[in-house]
Length: 227
Ligand SMILES: [Zn+2]
Image (cartoon, rainbow, N blue to C red; front, top):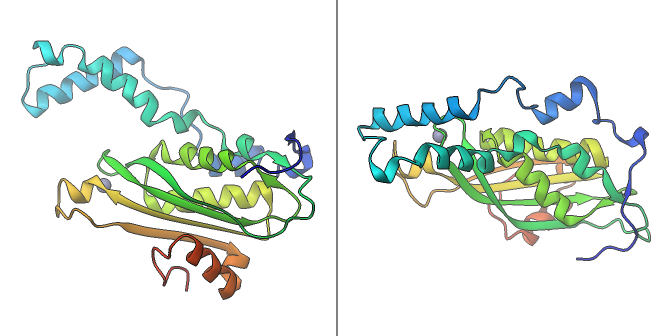
């Protein structure tokens, strides 16, 4: 979807969540005292040893370095700033005030309890008041929170809350459906089970028709969601 109007930076007055304690709560800022890459690689070597393998054999020699690089991708969200992403909004939308839905956004995260992947999709809707945001920004906000150690419930709330705080729309809805590898490949070993979480704010929480319209558009992953 292409929206009319030019992107521009929101005024400082609109960036309610742009600074201070509140934004740190939303962002979960990255630590600044991280270990060195060398220390990270040596920790991975220790895990290889602990699993029972020989980190010096040919196939594993470069593994600690590869895993460290993979971690930079898996956890890029700690260096992302969702508030800044959402602040690039369009105001010339000819009074468009209907629901905007972005569905089936690929979601790749990691469970903070077992450090294994959570793979699924996110659906986001909001009812704009004056401003809309480029749809790619919504997808990037999902990544900003997903590419961290997460629990699905918290991630769902963080995505919805950041959209609410920055765009101040008439309502926000976020639904995430995901499979947790800690359930499928270990523990209870139950493949095919999806967990569905939702966070409904504003009109999506108070108006059953609005909520139902959204759930119909996204294919009703859980018809009871938010009811
Ligand atoms: Zn887990």
